[in-house]
Length: 283
Length: 283
Image (cartoon, chains in turn cyan, orange):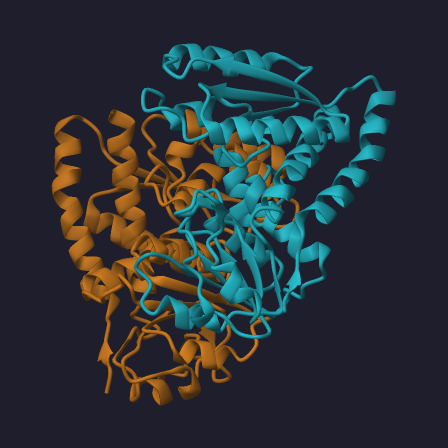
């Protein structure tokens, strides 16, 4: 039976650590504030937003939601972003993605003030992740995966880490962050031959493919720590990760569940980024 | 005996392909031009500069060298970069690195116009490499390694690629570019345990560690293609790569020599980037 790496414990410690920093900011008259930009009412966005608002309350971070129609024209969204850029009382800006097809996402990313990009959306943040420098902010989910590993004292230096998936929001940034922690990192994807064999050699396996129950016992070894970043819905309408939890959990050393794993930590990282953005804005 | 992957053949084809593009630019009154910024007379810089000037002559690219003292103050270098940024007749700018200690390299990178960054120095270029988008320019040496693999029709899709080294000028960008070609990529470095065992499993091995003759027969298999990016000087003062060429060459499928391998291609990539920068500036 594996150690179950619950996200709540990590999130609570992260939020607690923020309390002092938020208190210090408030004595200086600064109230760390997050702008959330949402186009339409996508269920995933709404669910994440609820989680973010709850977490923000715990962290004493203010939230302002820009609820916009799903068919908002490009120019109008650009105007909203510019408004947020210019508003000194807003320190971070989360824009729900993917944006609808009428929106040029690259233009929006280029417009957002780098200092307010608290979810690794702009070139400045992505270059920082690539360089291994804390100049911007990493995508929150990728950083949540690393935060869990660190919280549970999983040794990363010299470890063999295998990342399944190469997306810009998780796979690639998490690979760079593992490299920064001195892991030996392999990135696998849909074209990888014999993906199970490669995964099986991992000390740390990050599953970020977005395919329900793809990681089966053939991917695993008894010393392995698995971080399951997938959020999928199975045949029965149940939330499930990229890992076939029931068959894998009995084999490996440690594993994050879905739900109650990575997803529980992401909004805490978001709040940490907002507080950090507020601190940086004061320097 | 391995196939010897000579750089000259690749460089010549690349330069030839540029001829048409340069001719077309010239009919529009545009002469693609490269600014080289050199502080002092470091032998490596001078040697690379000579190669670049020769290659530029073949590609009909104009070169302007800014020869500056090694102890140039930060402000003066910033003024030179600003001058280059504003000069529409200069399309690309190569700044020899590492810069001397009195120079804040990050500030210089932030100052250089992204459109003129033809060697992957700015955040915009690095974010492009990370994203797998051609928005900026990759570091020339990393792209040279990929150009050799493509020229000699080495299959990369689904191939196991192992990169030895994680520098920002070679290891990391070459890893991202291999990923873009659908290879399964492993990045190894000084903290990697049993590096030879990992390397041995590679279909394509990129050696970019900067350690003379580090890659020995234990790193190799008979189907392997090796790209040796190292440029070192051995005990006898002879130029040598990261690969112990004599013992490895008899074992593997194909290998680049040092010299006459990757180093022969880098300046052609540089010229390609200058021409591309000139084309983009016209759009």
